Image (cartoon, rainbow, N blue to C red; front, side, top):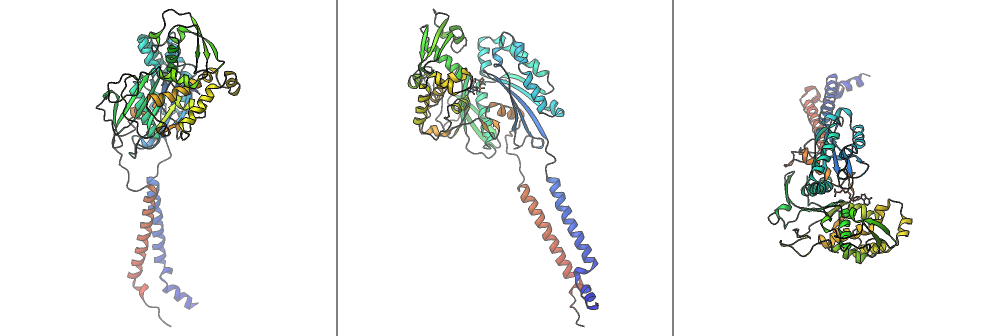
Length: 496
Ligand SMILES: O=P(O)(O)OP(=O)(O)OP(=O)(O)OC[C@H]1O[C@@H](n2cnc3c(O)ncnc32)[C@H](O)[C@@H]1O
């Protein structure tokens, strides 16, 4: 018993003072690490929100974006939280009853109210951007376009969000913001990686935007947009072709085939057996074709399908002008275009159409893609209708639209069978739709800084690990020093 007591007394770890120091030390380390961890961890995730309405030529879409509240103006990830498709046509179709353009937006705005916490409504910015449909309406009837904007503004102001304006986007902005969206979502901008070009096919216009080492904006400066994003400079080439969205391109193709005012045409871009009566007035009711309307025509013509891909390509080629170019190189219609460079993301109707046709895999040789499309175009209309249960208007036009897409890319933009594989058909990137709206909001909310934000030298995990290891190390050193300095600890055990 006495030997045991003596052993205990001689063992420094059994001295009360040592035990107290050890306990205090452990408590100190645990407290230190806990405080550091809690202090630096993000407090319960809070989000901020932004709403953008894309008032396109064919329809309007509402997008809600969200981002972590503490990451404002930083590299924080902004993501799409909700998408609502407005029922009915685009706002430019409401010229006769402009108030209905405003009313059409109400149900999606109500959805937005439900999807954003109520207390965040007053600080949620709300934007509306109108694209090619309203560009055409402005050309055709500027006061009608003003009326539509007024009606839309009235509706938007009636909601509890922070209304930031409804405006017409220039084609150049539409192209540039589409490019920003794609590269932001792909995380290319923060890291200064080689960027991806953006190909956007709408109903009334189409945009091409990319960075080329051979373009600095000196030739055709109208096509240049310069950005400084996260500390990297970009000179983007961008062009928007008004009237070359797929709906207006179809009008151009029909106008080409009805120049002489026939009572019937056999259109190779529609399936064999397709037979529709069309009104000349409806086909030519657009500034894209109104000046081409034949003088003497009957009211209608019969639109028959011919189902021939090669002939369809010829019709489509005729809507492009390849003869005049006052620059070193052009795409079409005398528009400058530098050499294509890098990867491209093709979205909106590029995706809708190629996805329907099962042709989104660009690693498949272009020749094979063309053969498949040719086979599809040659399929009789009755068979097509039997095989697919989708609205007939879309269904009837996929042969035309697919052929238009390939012709626009290969003949218009100068992609080749080799560079075709640099295109990726995309709809979403990380759950956010590809399109101009996200880039537009990031720009207007200053969410992409010109300079790279300062970031801590260590990641959060490395930081916590280093602090923990150092604290333990210091504690061990402290105990060792204490042990060596304490005289009683060093006394040799007495042999009794
Ligand atoms: O940019 P603008 O030219 O103003 O047009 P938009 O905003 O209306 O254009 P979208 O990208 O919304 O749509 C592009 C086209 O794709 C069509 N579209 C939408 N969904 C489709 C689908 O599932 N299949 C085929 N076409 C589709 C739509 O009618 C348009 O003609």
